[in-house]
Length: 98
Length: 385
Image (cartoon, rainbow over all chains, first blue to last red; front, side, top):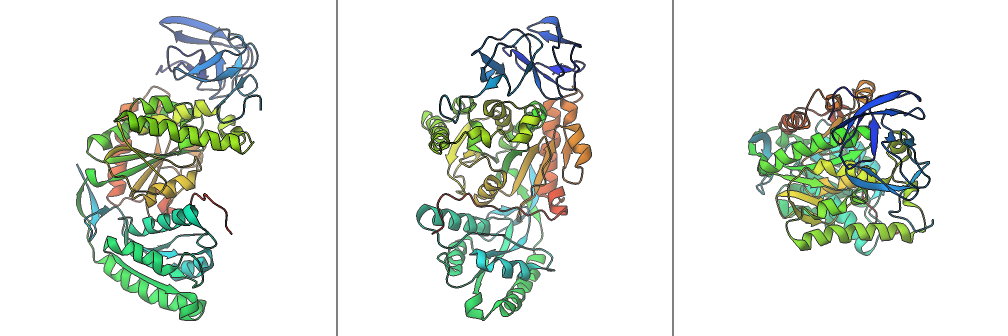
């Protein structure tokens, strides 16, 4: 796990990263994504421990963390946008459409 | 590798030497508490069930209470009943007897009221405590240790630091020939395929998937949304979005070894190595189930912080959240937040946890024990009638 970055990317398949300090909207985070150094501009504040998108994720697409799907998006998510309960839904343990 | 433990007459080994008072029913819980009051080394179970239960529900309560009695951390047992309950004190005492430790039972109706029951109970306990004090610790191989694992009050640090570090400790415990129990089936939802792949046989892998499917079906059958309970509001505030995300972080604590067996709630493992016990995600329900299954020690990771402890076993608390450690130092034993900052590897943190497990198994008190935190809650599977 990277020492100096303000965010952690756990698995190279992930399309989100986790902030390990509170990050302010408009600031830029440097991260190594699939071997490339990338700078991601945050579209809003990201509280410590919360996730932001590494690339655009379309509606209904899987959000990937730990290299595995953790839920599907309910709206298109832009690169640098906060990814959480307001735009991601889980389909496990409940009725479809509930 | 060895720890300093207590050898029991049936050959098993404990890490503590408690004298345990078991109220067979909620009605005798008050007397049980009063009997243990001011007697050092004596503990009681705050049991709120034991009457008006039938079938599998009654069996589960009985099996859990008996499992606490037979747990090798317990030197001797006094069962206290009221007298008219449908889970009688005598039935529990008789089921503990095969463990060959001293077991007695008394009933409030038979002895003649609470005061006489307390006096009689205290007299029996003082004898048991004197005998317990005479038993020395001796070196016991780690292969005889069953380590329960658990996570509660999770946040983003659980999946990044404390659970992977506990996983590394779990691997060391299995390498030493010992046993590790993974539980909280509902918190495997979304990660079950990863665990099923690691099963010793395809049948064991299928059991993992079947148990998850059962829990998911039960959740759906209630007509409610599982998300109302899991992830919990604190999990969400801590950055966990969905149950799958929580599960994927959660599963790390079982390490990377082969899954040897799937067992039902409060049953003892028949195998050594990594075991899955089918329990709810409820922290105390699952801790109680693993202790009833014979675990002598638990390692509990937390992000948000939790005070959890057991009446009969040390519960070592680990956090990967530096702020939680600073705020809740009196509850939390080890801080592994350096993993997130890249200052300690997961393996190094795992080795620290494993060393703490051996120290605590050998007598060092966990923070929860120092605080006298003794949580007990049986996973209820039926109505009281």
